[in-house]
Image (cartoon, rainbow, N blue to C red; front, side, top):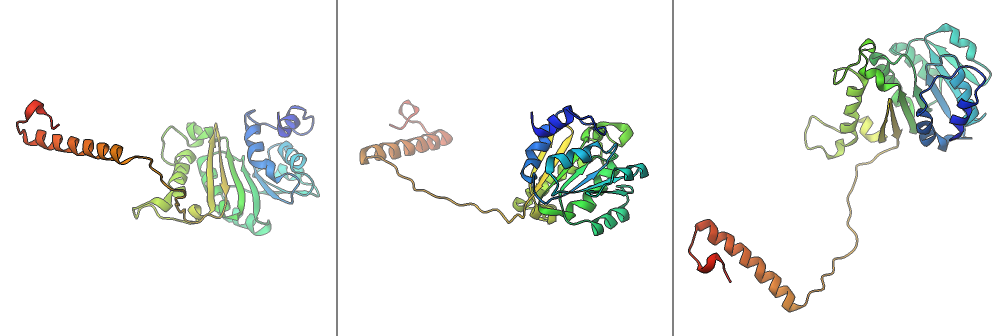
Length: 254
């Protein structure tokens, strides 16, 4: 049990609402930032409990920002935490948020979970994440819920949208004009899909290169080499004779 899960289980403060398997994913991708001067933005502050959880986990050096459409969430602010009020599907609002906060180390999208909200937030904010930062979008099961705009294989869901990330991650190897290297290819190191979650870890990427090292050593004496070579040519000649249906003793070349 990691520290985040312990905090959640022992929480007596503001409400935190999470699927239990999320804590393993959080700790796997966030632990390297603990105790450091990081910038965290969480979309969807809800009751404010998660903002307190992040503060406890990352420490006092972290700059914590929240975002929510509900004006009442402004009450979750303190001297170390700021909350922006606005819609995550409003591109102009997101641009204003970017102008007011430093580049982000960790972005957590736990907002409204509709397809438009998740896609717009990614498109506007992914570029504001540091080159070694982490983007996490959770509750992706709404991509399968009709009331959120979802549905299995339905066009326009965040799941279907994000499947294109796989192609862009591998665009270096494309031989077709329809798939080209772009800013995502150059900045995304890895994609991680979990139940209801996607994590993108960023890193400045260069075109991959292939190398060979070592040497080949074949320990064959002349007699063995000659026998292998002869057998290879026997097989080739047999196939040729078979193709032309030429008569041969026993149907074989010996």
